[in-house]
Length: 457
Image 1 (cartoon, helix red, strand yellow):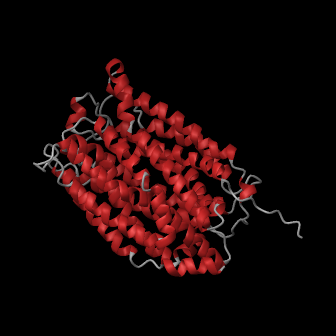
Image 2: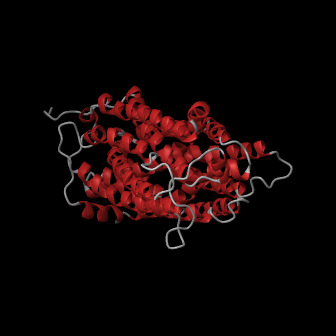
Image 3: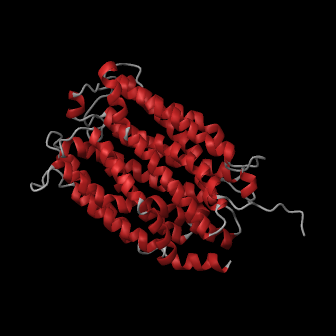
């Protein structure tokens, strides 16, 4: 016998407590991704409902980009470059509480606060001061969410000691991710309750404040429920953030995955940002139907969680993800025709979109995280270095650059034919093209080699 401490196997109840943290940050991320552009670049329907304009509109930046598009794109680039820095700090952390939990603890409050402040404005009219304040608060939001999410996702391969545990963790946190995003999509239902007495903008801000409080509680649950050192046995890594990032991208299969992932995130970000506009502009339905459709999509996708979990273990994650690319491509193509299908009422056109998108939504909610866990474990076997945090940071570094591109594209393209919705249709078709590209790139990922290496060791 040795005096070396043995790590515990994580229980199902602890997995769920860990996953509540994902619900918190996905709720805050959902508020930003779903309602930021809707709040600061409202369509005519929202303006007629009383939405105030706070920043200059149109292609005000060099005639090629909107203010909100330029701000979000730059903030995303800033966010991408902070990922490897936070990951390196986390990987090299020598705290007695572990390498990850201290980051979760100290970033929870700033993340919740900055999310709320993003939707506040110093001046109650169109002003460049509002744009400057939004820019600063958005930088704060992205720094805080990186400080939370990068160490959080690095815990997935560390808490999961084998393929089944990692799949279980990925499945559960996918459930809470979708739940958090669904709550964010429910914002119009909540602000609709306060709007008659408070007015539209105060009602929206009160809703965002309440959601941020709920998210703060969720963010802190894993901090106090998970004792990291009981489940994780890993030594702090050495080297700078830049050198660690370079080592991570030397992994050939990781590069293939990341290229595919960038295309996926460009597509899904444009689609998610556009969903409220697809509902109100293309289908000419009330904004509250955005909540109905997304919650329905979420509920339906949950039915696929256990089958996907089992099929991924049986036939492999790669085949499942490729199937998801096919379904999402079809859903985005279909979205481009919303409102122009004469034999279906608008409400039912939206329902068909729900049916098309629910299945791939479940696939991409579960499996990409598990793929990164596999790649990082395989790399650790080959190199002897535990750089799980950097693998997740490198992934987010890449896809956030993609998201910055998607925000520039969406906010610029959506201005074309605003009254007729032409720009929103163009966004949907472009999303389909990026999704198809992502599927083609993912064909080159060598899953069999990585799984064989893990099983052998």
